[in-house]
Length: 281
Image (cartoon, rainbow, N blue to C red; front, side):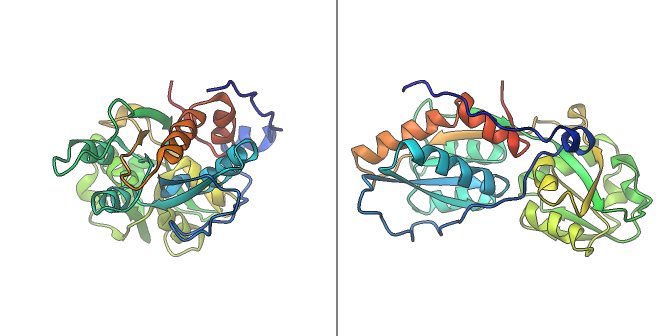
């Protein structure tokens, strides 16, 4: 694969130093998976399944890639990692899968019903951070993960099957606050983005999300605390793998492989970092 020249991005240094967020908030147009009409010049379409938290960044990366590969149409499908795994197992066409944790990727890889994951293609692509959020200037008495039991309102929390929810529960166990936390008024969500929205809209006092998610609404949120890596049983890692797609032709398989390599490039790293993701090193 040809080497690519890394794009140069202007850094919003003041905002980044204060909040740890450089996210611009812009969104690319999203096509529903499998519904986008093929352009007459398209020679390959690839189905890219990504965790919800990657939705915005994968839209931009697709646009960047297509500038130099106009014959390739990238069709993203962004949902919860567990939902994406289930869709792949049910037979939905997928060429590339990026999960928000290793657990869902491992379940897919170890599924004995079919050979879903292409041999040797699983790589650790990205890392993220788990943060505790509240509404902007909310006045909550919660000052950190250890003081979550002081929450007097609703605590928005992703479900246990959702990677962010699983990581949150690991933190509660490490801090020995699990029983106290689950005695609170918890609004359990199926998507980490829904947790962010609930807190930003004032429907919940606090919530736990990824830093990248918090930065999407940083004008309406305060980041109270960041989970220490030592509080987690497993690191926050986004693995990526090529998926066997029986309906793909040779050109589409080659395009999927090339986009897979592109996502590990320095050019892609600059875009990921703009959205507050860090390449796994």
